[in-house]
Amino acid sequence: MSDPESSKVTIGRGLLKSSSLVSVMTLISRVFGLVRDMVVAFFFGAGAEADVFFLAFKIPNFFRRLFAEGAFSQAFVPVLSEYRTQRGPQAVQHLIDRVSGTLGLVLLLITAAGALFAGGVISVFAAGFVYHGEVEKVALATDMLRLTFPYLLFISLTAFAGSILNSFGRFGAPAFTPVLLNLTLIGCAVWLRPYLDVPIMALAWGVLLAGLLQLLFLLPFLRAAGLLPVPKVDFRDSGVKRILWLMVPGIFGVSVGQINLLLDTVLASFLETGSLSWLYYSDRLLELPLALFGITIATVILPSLSREHSGDSPTAFSATLDWAIRMVCLVGIPASAALVVLSESLITTLFYQGEMTPRDVTMASYSLSAYGLGLLGHMLVKVLAPGYFSRQDVATPVRYGMIALVANMVLNLLLVWEFKHAGLALATSL
Image (cartoon, rainbow, N blue to C red; front, side):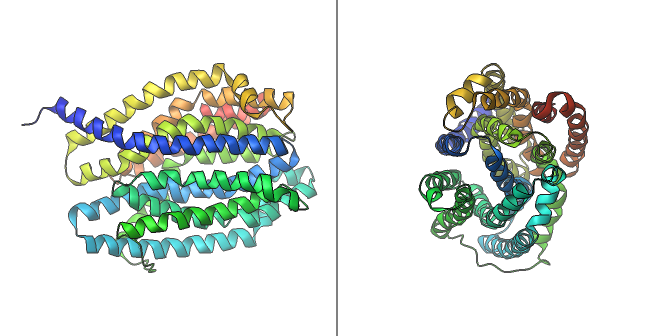
């Protein structure tokens, strides 16, 4: 019999190797992401136009988290892993073809509806703009959303392609794709901006172009792996139905944090101009350790947990989850302390330039400190949720996700009056 401790060490080394690769690629992406945000801060600061862009980008980004990195990946990867373990390559390709066609059709319909009814969507997610009669901000946000919403289609299909590659142990290319988003936005802000009547629209065009580039980037890797899908729409396929069954309730279980952040956006639209931007800049710094360690580790362990559960290996399953929790705590605790204690220094160093004012720095540091308090919780959710979804248990994450969602809504309403935008951030952390 093998030594359990030796098995844990072997599993840990394998996961560490994979997570290190993803972390390096994610680090490169996040460095360019910070450069992107510094460029945006330099040219646009935290004024009304910046508020509008962050809103128009956050809406499709929110749906991306639900369809791409959230519920879809958590539902698709376990089913795909089961097909790999218990069936043959032909069945795997059959599933990939039908999921790609069905998912693509659903996303196309949602994207068309979002672009067609952009004004109504803005009225819901930026109710504060409408309430205060800020007609110009509403009109600009609507125009921007018509450009940024198709990003949902491209980036969700990109995430689908990335999930396939991740399931086959090919983590590098999917982890690199966000670099293309950052480079495209930087390029548009620097070179396209001067040629437009409304300069901030350059960022909206950049989002649209970046989504397409990321999808095209992954297709050669799928072809090289012999996994390039031939899309076929089939809602009656048993694999597709299982994925949809797992995905719909899973939206709440795995994406509570994103829903909470979107609720913050709605309430922030009622606050003074700049509030959306302050929350955005502070959230970007929260996302750095969360993506480098929390999301990276979650990405690596989900295929492993799914295979171990399908292969009836509870000892290996436990060892994998144990390793993930230890790694998250090792990094998350000091990172959380750093965001709280060094919030103003971080904001000043990265964003105090160009159109950013000293008051913008101070206000953004308040929300960063509040977000920092919840970093470890965010990271633990990222690694614990795959433990349930890999077992195709959606009920448990959904139950606690709903509780957290309601708690966040109540705390938002309690704290926003006294602490304004920082109260929204604090509610999310709590």
